[in-house]
Length: 98
Image 1: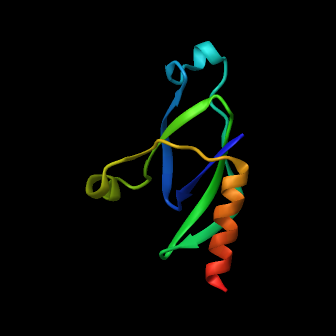
Image 2: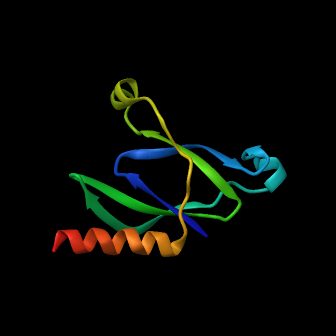
């Protein structure tokens, strides 16, 4: 599995795999992307930890609301992280809070 953090109120858009954009007909399923119950606060924003299947290389994320979308646009996460990296980020965040 791979992981990424996503700001509360943002959603996943397009998904890429090794061959390009995710093709549900080829893979015979939607990409497995799920929000975990783990979150952290960073710079006043709530960040949720998401888990994705190994075949996913990159995800596009964007604000849920149209107002924010017009002001911010979209962001592409180019690098997903491993479980060890997610734990390291969470533990560093926890240490900063104390």
